[in-house]
Structures are given as structure tokens and as C-alpha cells.
Amino acid sequence: MLDGLNELNQKKLAEVGDPEINARIAQYEMAYRMQTSVPELTDMSKEPKEVLDMYGPDVTSPGSYAYNCLLARRLAERDVRFTQVFLRGWDHHGNLPGSIRQLTKAMDQPTAALIKDLKQRGMLKDTLVVWGGEFGRTVYSQGTLTKENYGRDHHPRNYTMWMTGGGMKPGIVYGETDDFSYNVVDKPVHIHDLNATLLHCLGVDHERLTYRFQGRDFRLTDIHGTVVKDILA
Image (cartoon, rainbow, N blue to C red; front, side, top):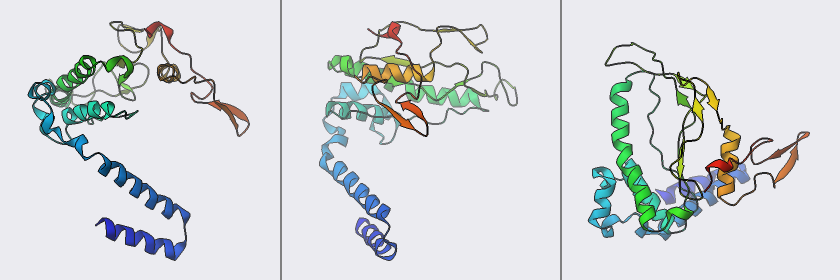
């Protein structure tokens, strides 16, 4: 199949001469070399039973959140600098009561296991774990508004993310909303502040790289962002 794909790409390149096709071929080949260079990475057979049990029953199912959390630890052990683990399906405009139970069941144990696993191996102190999404949900309901079936709308005004390891101060809550979780009333953290803080923990000064484009200066956090020092260890 890969050989056939290469032939098709080469044929298209000969027809149109688009250098982007060459770039795509090179990307495929690099990705293949990366995957085949560490075949032992996805071989979980040598993981101790107590480690597998810690991540939960889904850890042996490739593609599950639990499996990917264990895979993230194995990637970190091999000095992979950035790993993103997805758990999709949080867009609950309806059917929230049943869906949220399934997601939290899939998430809680593996997430806790990943942190514990990193910590007991001495890796958490220089591994930054960030858990969150792109926005929050309203505290009030929408949809059919029955006990068994209701939902919540998008809410970008405030939401919660948590971070651990990698320079973060443990055991604190930073910021506060009003009683209706509608507005931030204390210590707001803008997305640019969050990014500046994450970059700081990674050893990157977000103000150092500044470049001019279309008449104004840009940097890694646009033109905004302040490191939130109160949450740093």
C-alpha cells in the first residue's frame, strides 16, 4: 500500500511539478522512519502488572485514553519533548448525564495513574502535565431539561484547567468566579497569560522573539501575556 501511494505521488509530481508534493512525500517518509525506529515503544508486554492495573482495565486496548496515557509516559521516558493525549466527546448540548459519566469513568483513573507513574519514576519534576480544553460550559442547562436528558452550552468567559509537575506549585487553586460561574471575580488568567506561563516553565521567554509583520510587532503570545508567578513553585 505504501509503495502504491509513493507511485501515485511520484506520478502526480511528474505531471504537475508542484514542490509541495515533494514536501508531502518527504513528510510521509519521515513519519514512517520515526514509527519504525522505536517498535518497542508500543510493546506493553514488559510493563509490570501493577503498572497496568494502576491505569485501569482499558489500558490494554490500543487507542483508548488509558492506553494513550501509558504511551505518553513511555514517550516521555524516551525524551519525546511534547505529547498530546486526546479524550473527545465533551460537547454536551444534550445527553449530558449519561455521556459525562462515561467520559469521567474513562478519564479519572488513567489520568491519576499517569501523574503517579511519572512521580514515582522521578520524572514529574521536569515533566509539565497540562489538562484542559478550549472553553468551559455554562452552569445552567439547555435542551430538553429533563432529569435524564439535558445539556450545557459553550462558555468562554471562565473555565478551569489544571497543571502539575514541571515547575508548578502543588495543591493550590488560583482565581475565582462569581456564585453563578458566569464571570471571573478574582485573579483572572487570560489565555495569553497561560501560554506565557507554560513557555516560562519550558524555559522560553515569550517576549524574547519579536518580529514585525504587516505593520505591527508580534511575539509568541501575540502582543499580550504575563507570567503568572503565583502558581510557580
